[in-house]
Length: 243
Image 1 (tube, rainbow, N blue to C red):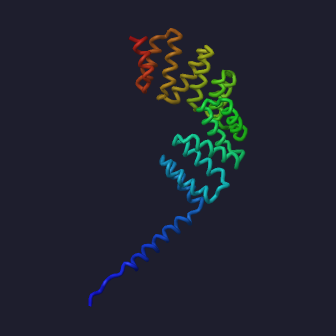
Image 2 (cartoon, rainbow, N blue to C red):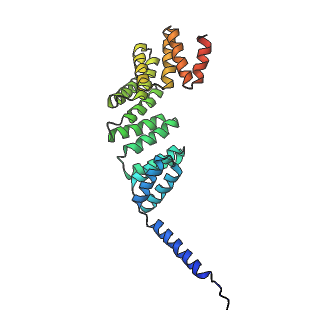
Image 3 (cartoon, helix red, strand yellow):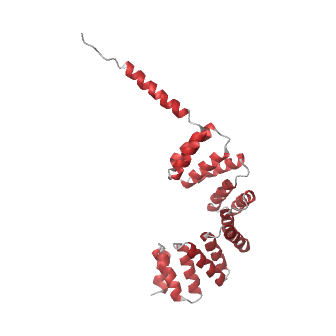
C-alpha cells in the first residue's frame, strides 16, 4: 500500500502560526509602539519611527505627545508639511506643549514666515520660560526683521540660561558686528570658539571682523582655520587677501 502525505495539515499549521503572529502584532499597546518609535528614532531610523508612531496614534489618537514625536521624526526626514501638521495637532491637543511650538516656529522660520515664527516662539517661552533654544531662535527671527535690540536681548537670555550655548554667542556676535560693536563682537566670537573649536562660521566671521580692524595676519589665520574646516568662501578670501 502506498502512503500519500496530505498538504492540508501543514497548511493548517502555517495559517495557525500566521494568525498567532498577527494577533501578537495587534496586541501591541500604544505604549509599546511609542517605545519602539523612540528606539528607532535614537538610531536615526526615522521611517521606522514614523511607522511605530502611526500605530501608536491609531490606538491612542488623543495623545498629543505622539503627534509631537512623529512630527520630530518627519522634521528629521525633511517632511516639513507633515511635521507642521503634526505639531499643530499636538498643540491642539496640548496647548501648553512648548516643544511643538518651538518646532513649528523653526519650520515657519525656514519658510521665511518670521512674524509667525516669533508668535510660536513666544508661546514656547510662555509655557517653558527656561527654553534657551526658543530664545535663540526668536532672536534670529527678530534680527531678520531688523529688531537688533530684541535679537541681542534674546541671545543674551539664551546664554544666561545655558552658559555653554556656542551658537547663541555666535549669533549675538554677528548682530554686534553689524552694529559695529567690534570689541563686544570679538569677545563673543572668542567665546563661541572656546566652546566649539570646530565652529567654522565663527572663525570665518571673526576673520572678517579682524580684517575690518586692519589686523590682516589674524584675519588670515582665522580664514585658514575656516578653510580647513570646510569653508570654500574662506578659501576665496585667503586667495584674495592673504597671498
